[in-house]
Length: 171
Image 1 (cartoon, rainbow, N blue to C red):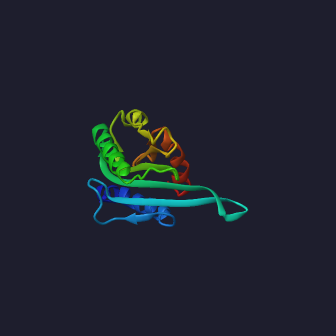
Image 2: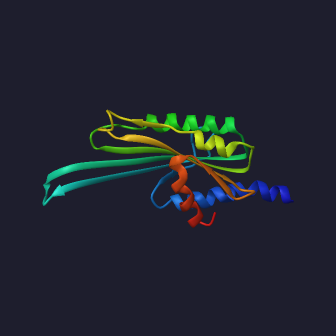
Image 3: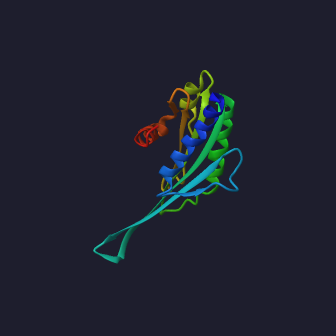
């Protein structure tokens, strides 16, 4: 009985996380890229004007592509493979232009347990790309892993701000 409750726990946590994304993101659960459980996309377009709309000085597009993964036991190789796959798929959706500001790729992993050394490995996973020397924007990779048993986080540099967001949602 106790083992089935533990197996359900990461799925319940993932549902809670997805509910926090539903307001601003388009969430897709069917027909998602393997091995991910769900995907979410955020798109924002802003314009800046001087006095009147005809005097437009800037278009600003910002995007985020989020990949969600469930794992019973998360190991270093599984994390590295998922991060690489999320990064490559996220970059394939980027359309750099002078109005493009950023398109970030985020991987959120919920696991029952981590193997030893996962926190250190998560810190080392870093991807970033600039387009035309950042004149056409950039992309950064954000990573957050959550261990359900111990309620601890592992993240990379860009994923640190996600910890606060997830703690506000009761994790």
